[in-house]
Length: 262
Ligand SMILES: Nc1ncnc2c1ncn2[C@@H]1O[C@H](COP(=O)(O)OP(=O)(O)OP(=O)(O)O)[C@@H](O)[C@H]1O
Ligand SMILES: [Mg+2]
Image: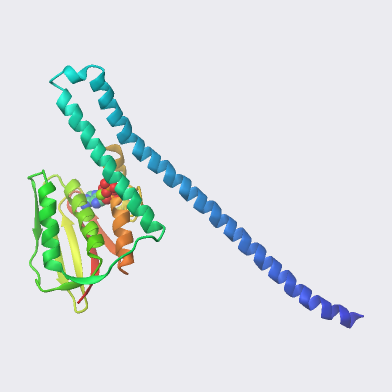
C-alpha cells in the first residue's frame, strides 16, 4: 500500500510542478499584456495631444480670418502663412509617427548596400543648407578619406543625419556645426558636433525615448515632438550599431555612431 502511494505521488508531484510553472508563466504573460496595453494607451494619448495642438492652431487662424481678419491687410497674409506652417508641421509629425510605428512593429524593411560616404554627406549638407534660414550657423564637414564606402540603408541613414543636423541647428543659436569622420580599420565613426545650448546631464539617457523632450523644450515654444532621436536610435540599432552622446550646457553636444566600412 505504502509502495503504491509512493509510485502515485511521484507523477503527482511532477504534475504539481508543471501546473505551478504554467501558472507562473500565465501571471507573467498577463503582466506583459497589461504593460503593453498601458504603453499603447500612453502612445495614443501622446499622439492625440500632439495632433490636436496644430489642428486647433490652424482652426484658430482660419476662424479668425473668416470672422473678419481676412479684410485686414495687416494680418491676413501672416495668419495664412502661420496656418500653412502649422499644417506643414502636422505633415512632418504624421510622417514621424508612421515611421516610428513601422519601426516598432518590425515592419521597417531595410535595403543594405555599400555607398560612398563623402558624396552622401555632402548631398545631405547641401540639402540642409537650403532649408537653413539662420545665417549665424555654419555647417562644416571636416576633411577625411573621400574614398571610404560604408555599408547601410542609404535612405534610412539620410534620416539619421537629417534628424541629427536639424537638432544641431535647432538647438544652436549661433556657432558652428561640424561633421567629423574618423576612419578605423573596419569601421568609421561619425560625429555630429554643435556649439549649442547643450543637454542637462540628468536628461542625457532619456532623450532617445520617443516623445521625450527636455524640461527646457517642453516649456519653450521650440517646435518638436521628441520623435527625432527615437527614430535615429531605432534606425542605427537596425544597423547593429548604437548612438552615443556627450554634452555640456552652453558649450555644445556631440552625437556619434559607428558604421561598417567597405
Ligand atoms: N543637439 C542638441 N542640442 C541640445 N539639445 C538637444 C540636441 N538634440 C536633442 N536635444 C534635446 O533632446 C530632445 C529630444 O530630441 P528629439 O530630436 O528626439 O526631439 P525634438 O527635436 O524635440 O522634436 P522632433 O525631433 O520630433 O521634431 C530635444 O527636445 C532637446 O531637448
Ligand atoms: Mg529633433
